[in-house]
Image (cartoon, rainbow, N blue to C red):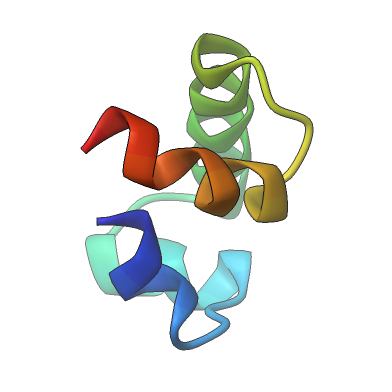
Length: 53
């Protein structure tokens, strides 16, 4: 899933607009996802992705 999203660099604003939430909501949930994955950014999450698939 993360690889699919990462093939195109969506901005927080684009994601928020697409799923009808505020940019702050996207930031909040992204931060929570990073905490659960124990990563600091999307690049680390992408590297981790094969291990969690």
